[in-house]
Image 1: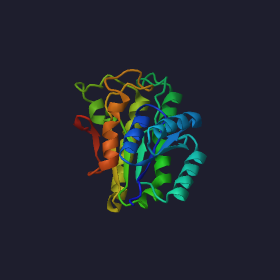
Image 2: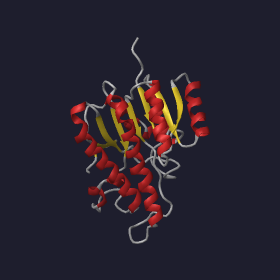
Image 3: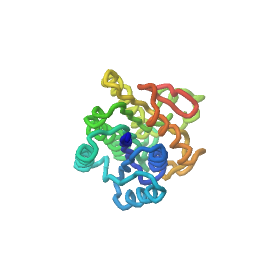
Length: 239
């Protein structure tokens, strides 16, 4: 009997993260729903379990080195490996704005969670990823993190000047590039995936549902044939 692949999706108690977890579980993957809020994570996992899917909650707060270390230890002890890591968790700071008026605290907070927290999780999970036969990492990015699109007046999000959020996604893209170069000889596929303009609690508005936005990240998590790319539903995104 073939053993199920193991996936960790951060920020998976709602929104895009939960829908990514659902798609992975529907593909036969045993999914760990990383959640800062334990009660919400357990409720989300219960919903998947009730649908006959293999899922469970894993307490994981990108702000907490202790929970990150504990999550990695749990995965190592129970499974010995991690086949898929989806770095979905992220925030948007209410004081974020154009560089001339953005709240420094808001920018610092967004960078700490969206980039530093994701880097910390990825570092902690690397030993388990290396133990998997064909591991894949998906970093949930955004076209707003593209330097090229931020500099293009014709780009759809050119006017969306949120220096903290945009910079955090640009930094996440740097993580993708450097991880790819560092690990390319080890067979680990690593890609930045922009899900599209999704209406979630983070955005408050958008053109896609969370279920629609989960399609591309789940596809790259399950079937990545390339690595070191920045993609969106319309194709390749310029760095």
